[in-house]
Image (cartoon, rainbow, N blue to C red; front, side, top):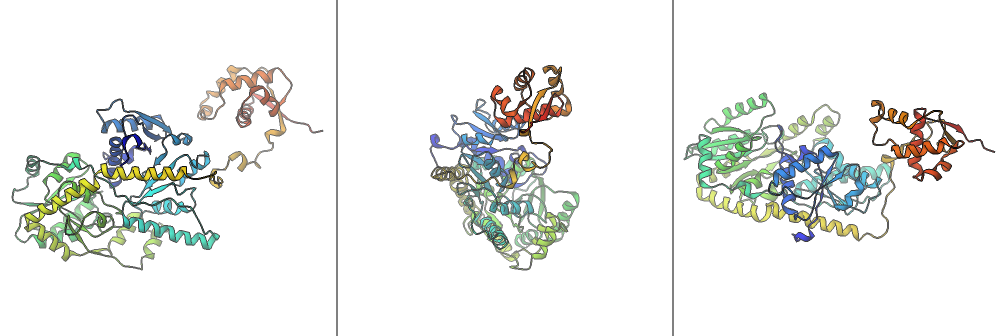
Length: 557
């Protein structure tokens, strides 16, 4: 990890929803966002500012509150607001971190402000199965991105899927437009991290948690943490079947710590559990409540997540389980392949999915016949987790406490040495230094044309008006005063545009010069007021709009 005096402080694209776990619809990206913010705070030397790239002052206030919430001992922590409408200031941070894979908008903002080589963009994958996420990846082929930008892929599996999307879209553009080369960002694989200290429990804390939950001392507790949605996370039936078969006469309690989207889904879990696992004790906890999450982790002996859903791209809970010293039984699926070492930290259960024939799912979603939930739910119905292998894995862990201990110890060591945020943030820093160096090594001006997304509206719609301002000369309307102009500027129907209204000091200069002479052209007036022509044109057109000045065509000889 870079030393503290070389640590880069990224500008964080901040919307509070993406960095808090207190919402009613808690998802993995919220946990990942909050954990990332904590990692930035811990990895940023006190002498370095933490940059919040926020829409407005209110947003920056929320950003500061979140930083201080995670860093209560540093009330004087240095923080800087980088306003969203001033991307030219992002060069102070060198890196703009985005909490998703979409780089298009910020790449266009960077291009439009002429800052192509001033800073790098760094996004990250969470789920890439949604239409919006897939579109943001396709957009990389037309976005003004460079090799000094990056999208962090949280697993090798999600990187492969991302590259498939890009390859398919590139082939379309090749055939449609003859396009053969697009400069692309880098796609490094860096897993999400875990703050291991959050998952350390004393024996007394474990016993107290089990007592609060009413768990018998002899029971072996199996824990699932995550959203309780059969269509979008992990169908519970394979888990229930495997546990029931593996338990034999062992006392087993299953804790499902998460949240149901609605009551019918909650009833569906009860229905499946009663059918498939009548002899397994059941506790359902609200995973949105920190105290209940903590009790769940403290009480557990084994962790499980038999994910079968394409919305999963990494899976944060297995590395949280590793940090808690729990052996895992997880599906051999997506990012789980990169985290749980089969036979060392736990067991990865084989999965199977068709290799072709899903075009109808994609088309129905594209045509809005199926919502995103139905799309991923339909696909998940054809993803099979090997129930026999899961049964065998659970049987070994349920009946062999020494195996649970050995695997749990190995898992904890792996979490501390590989997945702790102190390690993962070091890899982020290495990437950001690499991007910065690559950007600095570029010779010459790499500024791209702005393209159709950011055309000056005055140029784009130049054929709409009757007159171009360069063909006019201007005079002050009789008896106009600065007070009258100020009154008009404060009308509700006018001051909504305060961002672009001409400053009264400039208006005063214009009034004084138009008041003491014959009508003046823009060029003549500019010689008196000394502002850029674009600024003057907007000020004059605003005064003209409300009848405060008058215009006439310049007569040509």
